[in-house]
Length: 582
Image (cartoon, rainbow, N blue to C red):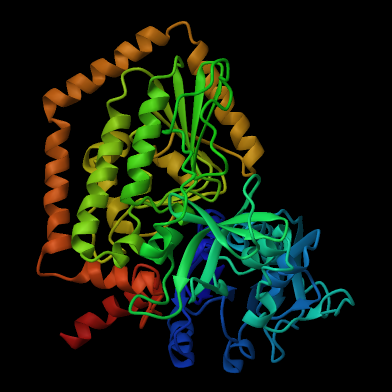
């Protein structure tokens, strides 16, 4: 089919559906929901068989759904309706939830059901549930709906409003508000989880108004309810009625840098300085004797190390996959410690939602000099990539449980083997961020895997890749899943096999010899200096495109038009008109 994806933004769900539907052989184009007139023009240009809306924030114009089949992906089970479906489900602590594909009509979320999928809920942030359970359910449900259309069938039924669901209004801040005196930790976590990603929970800390994000339980600390009692790297710990929770991200509601989130300690500034630190990353302290498994496991921090036999697993679960300068320094220290362990294989696990997305644009935006902060950040990530590339003590595996983009993709390519969970999405390019050139030794690592011609094509393409496509291109070595347990079992099996291989010493010698040959052809330092020369122009040059793009990204500024790499129909129309205008 010719399918037009109509979206508020090309988010994680939209990208995953784009990848899956393209793999199924559908002809796709994307239009951002900017204005009814623009949407109508897109439909006239592309002439789709179907308009699919996986992520919208307003109703589809009646002129479209009255003339075209328009299907909405709603993050709730049949019978549910409203703009805060998943928020309400998390806040109420429901056991099961779902995704419904329904037909657009005059009444919002009340059209005929074409397909649905259900899933068990887990205790997690809304953004995490959206990227995993909701996305996997949406893929299944959309495919089922398309099969019905292809088979000449109609919808399953008219919409039946089930008693346990029905229309739910917008979940407002007053209904999310935390009562620190009376709410227990589980209630606080549900409230913040229900608003994670957007809009956050409004609250006051040190007589300032913030929106709270990224909450995690604390198992040991306690204090007077509502009091901020500790800090751990970027997070702060706040006491509840029966314990405490960590809050990783804050978004100031007032002040000159309001309305974008950043690590809580950074947002609080001097207000956090007096808080006692409980920094317990794996770079801190020696492991206890005899504690091989979980040797450096921290207490719920961003960086965690576990060890089984001859394999070490280094987890780095950074919020939204952003790797800031300070985080990168800690991760480098943790990696250095892992290298000193008597193991043979190190698996770089990233986080469950994201492996890594490169530079921390929010921290950069908050800096006194974003150009200097950008320069420091990219150099620190380059140092980490070099550390991985030059590892001569272990074989390394980049195990991508979550999606990766920009510098995070190329950081993964620094490892000896690259595995990905089948359901992830990769964006191996930088240009969407104001024509950023990129570093992380991509000009060495990418052609080494896919060849020079294909490398340039990937960097210019600016579209997401699924794990299946990445494997066919040679970008990654293998994939498994799509669920996390199946993927972890695959990683464990490969790591154990590499560690137990009787030819391990020879394999390491071959690896070092290959690196030495490559160094003779062109030193790593040359690749880095050439990349950074381009990056210096991005950061300090006369063209402000990177700084403008970063600012718009951080502040979530809506697009004024759909980029042509997404709107294939507009690119074709432009080419057709050029001879006439000439």
